[in-house]
Length: 401
Ligand SMILES: Cc1cc2nc3c(=O)[nH]c(=O)nc-3n(C[C@H](O)[C@H](O)[C@H](O)COP(=O)(O)OP(=O)(O)OC[C@H]3O[C@@H](n4cnc5c(N)ncnc54)[C@H](O)[C@@H]3O)c2cc1C
Image 1 (tube, rainbow, N blue to C red):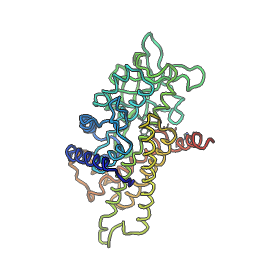
Image 2 (image 1 turned 120 degrees about the horizontal axis):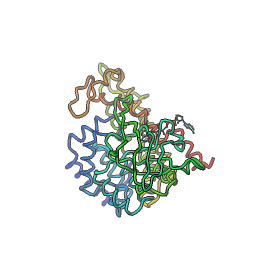
Image 3 (image 1 turned 45 degrees about the vertical axis):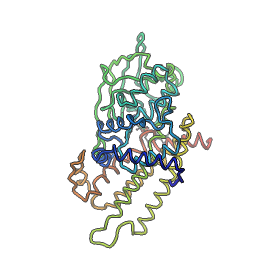
Image 4 (image 1 turned 135 degrees about the vertical axis):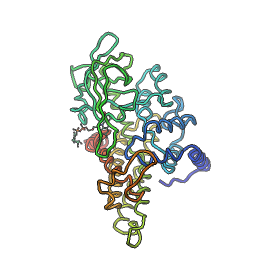
């Protein structure tokens, strides 16, 4: 998105550029490049969060009173764009993007005072316990039970597809505290550490070869009732509020712009034994141009969401729109990447991928992460609520159907 900058905004952009030049190490950039999904190697994303936090820039979207930057919408846009342009790793902190805003909206003063600073410092890292083997889109059918026992709940059940449960030290979780009445009315929202007795985590390795998601089991896990956010049986309201932040945060325009630039770089390589590059091919160029139009539309929508967040509102149905368009565009761009590298997309080439900078690619370096990113991107239209579910939300909330 090409916005004309005021002199103070250009000065801010230069400040961000110089901060990135000083702090973004080659190792951090290499890990960002070699990540197919959202989770950069955990110690590194923690390191990057701490570097940002030392500068007071860990939480661009939080209000200043809670330790956020207090930036204008334009400053946030500049910061996100410059980070993407410089190739910085995504922090992908559910604490920053989901738990923090939810505690600001629904937590107690004690909960805010305890958790928010620990999210900013990286001391607490969160995972989301919503989905269960039989409850995804139909989340209200969830069965994980929390039974009252004095000042505690005893939790039994299982959560699945839990992103980052193997590195998080805390979970925000939906549990059933009542089977009476409407299903939505018997759910509570609760926070707890992952090292409590009775919690176990099993890895799920996805088609891209990544370990990002897990299944988590609860066997008589004792959690104090004081860890509940909101009233007992009112967790559905809290959960829905949080989902708007999750969806709004799933498809950053800056990341899409980065992916598009990567695609252009791939397509601008000389075709072996041929004349010119794929970008010179009119049919391929048209597809890249169409993707660019869509990416620009996502950037504009994201700008609107940032405006809502800055003025203390939650993003509303716009978050469903950006989730839908952003996830679809991620898939379109990664599909074009596979088309561009042709036979280097053969499955055996994927085996060359390793973490870190000591990579020995089978094909040319620019082909290395194309297939893992394409594979990982298949999940984008499912997590955070599938595209069909986002369309249903917009049909109701925007079109009034
Ligand atoms: C990579 C990844 C990471 C994830 N991370 C997390 C996490 O950290 N925490 C967490 O709690 N969950 C997580 N999830 C789970 C995710 O939220 C669910 O997978 C998602 O909500 C879909 O639920 P489901 O898998 O049960 O599919 P289902 O709900 O069974 O859906 C199956 C198909 O039916 C369609 N469908 C369902 N209902 C409707 C409807 N009413 N109208 C039209 N179509 C419909 C869906 O769109 C889908 O195509 C993750 C998922 C993935 C893939």
